Length: 210
Image (cartoon, rainbow, N blue to C red; front, side):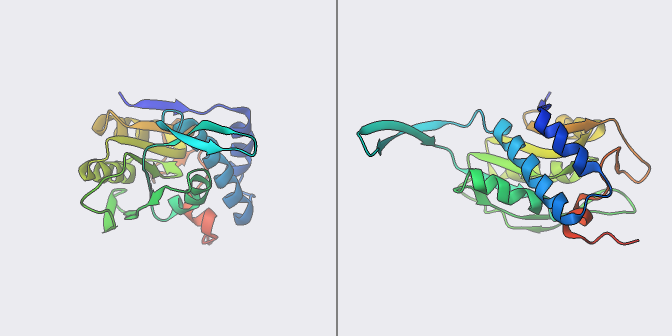
């Protein structure tokens, strides 16, 4: 079974309530996505490896530590783009790679239309960024692409996940680490997470109409 962490910190609960609110405007929605992503990244990076480095302070020389692994970020287009900058703020050396995936509204299945992953020199840790883990189809495709690249450690960061989405990912990739702010109980007939927050991409980029 995959390693699943639901971050129940009070700050997560506070920001998540406002994020779910349908009256929250796009500019605030984007800020809340960034804040929640930072809290997720804090949890998801606790097992990263460190190496010693010599540091010269104003007073003396000491041995400090810095990250010794190369991190790769793969945001699920388009909603995942809103999670990239918060991770880069904390891990400026991370690489960002893109996979183009969208959900066919008729079948609810993911369609893979673009890939920018190299074929050699995989990163040590791959993080897939997807605000909403609904059916798990897109996240699974992205994680499988990283696995095929040869990435040894896989992590999935989502703001809200459904029980079905977590089960779908875990069944195909039992070694993946999944970090979420909330696990919602179900999907509706259109495969949207309930209670969820609607369409994260539309709310992030202000493309919600009607």
